[in-house]
Image (tube, rainbow, N blue to C red; front, side, top):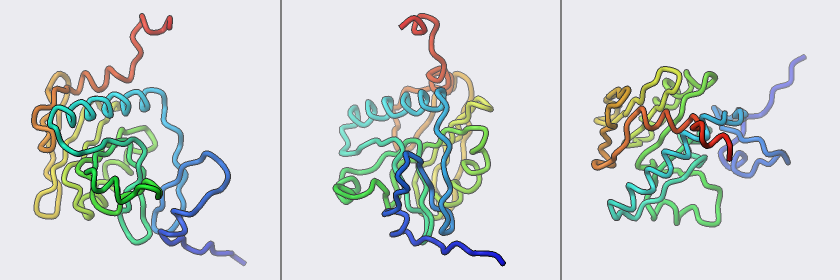
Length: 195
C-alpha cells in the first residue's frame, strides 16, 4: 500500500514552516529542499548584488536588488533566486508578506552549482521565459562563463560571455562588469586569508 502526499498549493507553500532553517522551492506542488550555497557561490552572489545596487544608484532608477527572493513561476511553482532586481512598486506589494514575487522581476540571476546545472539551464530558463522575466543571467563558475538571456517574443535570445569580456545587459546598459571579475569574487585573495 502506498501513501500519496497531497500536493501543496502556492498558499500552503507560503505558509509552510517546518521549524528549521531549511529553504525550499515549490515544484509542481512538492517541496524541494535547496542545499545551502557554497562559500564561492555566496561570494559571487554578494558581488553581483553589490554591483547591481551600484548600477541601480548610478541609473537613478527606483529599483531594488535582493538575494534569495522567491519568484512564483506557476500555479504550484515557486523558485528561489540567487539575485533579482525588482521595481519599488513590486517590493511595496510584498511589504509585510513573504518575499515571493508573482510578477516578473526586471532581472534574475542564478549562480550554477554542481547540483543545479539542469535546474538553472533548463527548468528555470523555461519557467522564467514563460513568466516573461525580461533578463536572466546564468553565472556558471563550473564553465567560466555568463549567459545573458533576453526575453523576446516569448522566448530567450542568449549571449554567452567569457573571460575579460564585459557583460552587456539590456537592463543595465552602463554596467562595468566582466566574467573574470564576477568569478574572481568567489575566491578570497591571499591577503584576505589573514583577516
